[in-house]
Length: 614
Image (cartoon, rainbow, N blue to C red; front, side):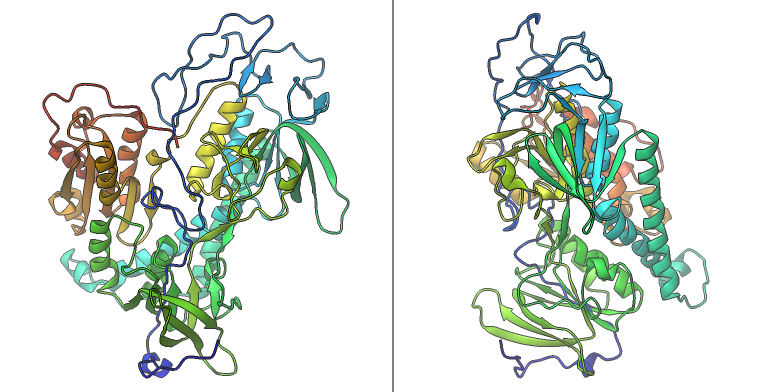
C-alpha cells in the first residue's frame, strides 16, 4: 500500500514537544462483561443454556441416586441431576460420562486406575489424576484446587510461571499504574492545595519505574512457583502437546520429549497480543503491551491503537509520565465496550482534560516503524467507506487491539478438535468439543484459550469449576457474575449487562427494567479525599428485584464492584441486599445508597428466576 500523505496529515514536527498515544479498536479485543452478549469477531459467540439432564447410567453396586446441588461460583440453587454418594472419599472415584462415583481402593496411592470408557482404549493406570497445560493464573488456580481435592497433579509450562498476567499483563501493568497514580496526585496542585499540602515539582526515574514493575512480576512469579512446589504439584518444563486420550508429550526444543498420562487434562495456554494485518511491530517504536510494560523509553508522542482496557490503562501511564497520546478507534465512539453512560463520564474525566486526542471511525491499516531518522507513520482508513482518510507521524505506536488465543501446536487434531478462530470450543462446563460437536471425554479448556471471558480471574474460576467437575460435583460457572475493572485514575468497574444489553434482553423476554444511580459526591469518604468525581449505576428488574448489571466509575471502583458481583452470583435480590449494613464513613456506602435507591414493586416476593450458566 502506498504511503498516504493527504492534505490534512498531521506533522510530527507540529507535536514535537509532547508525547502522544494512538488507540484503535480492531476487529478483536479482550472480553468485557459488556461485550459478552454481543461478542467480538475473534471470540466465539455465546448462547445461554440450562444444563441438560444427565444421561441414564446403569451402575453396579451403587445405591439409589437423588438430586444433588449443582454448584456455581457463588451459591446456587438445586437443579435436577445425580448426587455423589456420601461415602465418596478424597482420591476415590471412577468416571461414568460426566459423573464420578466411588471405586475400589488402589494398591498404589500414586496411580489411579482407569475406568472403562468410550474414548478408545485408555491405559490401565495413569501417571497423574490431572495434567494442566499452562501455568498462568488459570492453571495455577486449577492446580491449587486439585491438590485440595486430593488429586495427584502436574502442570506443564513452556515459558515463565505465571503466564501473561504475572509476566506481561495484570501484575506489571498495576505497578506502572501505581506510579502514574502517585504522579497525578503530586502534579495536581489544585487538589493538593485544597488539602492544605505544598509539594515541589514531581519527577521520576524511568529505569527505577521499570525496575519496580519487573521486580513485582518476579516476586509474584516466585510466590506462585513456591506455592505449587509446597503443595506437591509437579512442575514439568516444556511445551505441552496432546498425543491422544489421557496422553501428553512435553519437552524443550533440542531436548528429548517426555510422555506422561493423566485421567483428565486441562488446557490453559492463555493468549498473546493480537496484531492486525498491515502493522509492523519492531518492539522498539511499534510495540505491543508486552514491550510497553518494560518501559524502555517514554515517547513524547505515542499512538495507542485500541480504546479498550489495555489502551485506556496505558494512556493513563503515558500521560502521567509526560507523553501526549492519540487514540485511534474503529467504532464511532471511544470505550465502546463499556456502558455508554459510564463511557461518557469517563471520557470527560480521563480523556478531555489530559493531553489526549483521538480519531474514531477509522482503522490503522498500515503502521511503519521509525527508521533512518523518520517517525512512525500510521495510515488511517475510514472504517465505513474503506477510503484513505489521514496519516499520522508519531514517535511510537502501541498496538492495544486485544489478544488472540495461544493454541497452536497443542495436538488438538489428535483428539479430533478444530479451533474456531483460534479458540478451543467448549461447553458451559469447559469440556472440549470435537469438530462434530461431541464432548471429548476428560479434556477441558479454560481461560483465554476458550474465549468465553478473557480475564485472569475468570480463567481461575473456570479452572476451579473443572476440578469440581472431575472430582464428582456438577459445577457450572455464571460468567455474568464475574466482574471486570479498568485501573485508570479514577477506576472503572462493571459486572453483568450494560443498560442497552439489559433493555434488549427485557424486550425479548417481556419484562421491564429500572435503573438506579448514585454519585460519589454524596459520599463522605470520597469528599474527605477530595475525590467526589464518580458514578454508580445499577440495572435491575423491578418486578422481582433481580440485579442485571452494576457499573461504577470513581475512586476504588475496582474494589467496590465485588459486593454487586457476589450479589449476582448468589442470586441476592435488591429488596434483600438493601438491608445490608455498611461501615460509616466508607466508600462502600456508595453501593449502600445505590441499593437503597432502587425501587422494587411491592409484590416482588417470589424467588428470582435461576441465572443461566454460561
